[in-house]
Image (cartoon, rainbow, N blue to C red; front, side):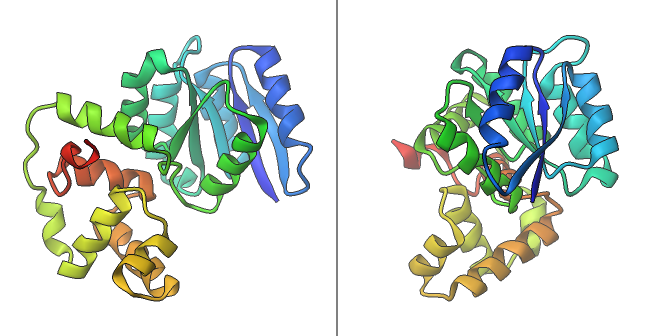
Length: 221
């Protein structure tokens, strides 16, 4: 059972998401929050698998709430899925840096919402859609020229190769096919990379790959 916390300041939005998610046999909405501060508190109380987090909320916005949840070692297993609109893309990139596992546009189709919750709950990043990769590339390109991160020195050549493919949005199966590996071996590589670099999930691997100049935005052109 995937346990979900809904964080949005609009009651009707929360009700709509609850109605969609509770129609699935493997999803349970365990609580709701009307602002960021309440989202942080409820996440600590309920320990959900996934927090659906709006960005624009009173008292404490979703970006800071995400940062606090992802920084709390007691909540290491809690994944944050950002709900947003295209006019706050800069906040989305900040949320990914803060530890969010991905994002959805608020007017997404119900089937996409359900799929996103399942993807994030199993530990994958919701970064496969091309629009997400373009967004990350756009904001990486706007920042100062990145310098290679000393953290990457701990990786083997194969692990660096796998990290590049993760940053390009490939799944474990896609990485396995590209490198002629078994899916289990690809998954092991990804897990070992996350451990070495001290990141929560694949979303942070993507951000790190861009910010350390391992991959540049130009490949998307």
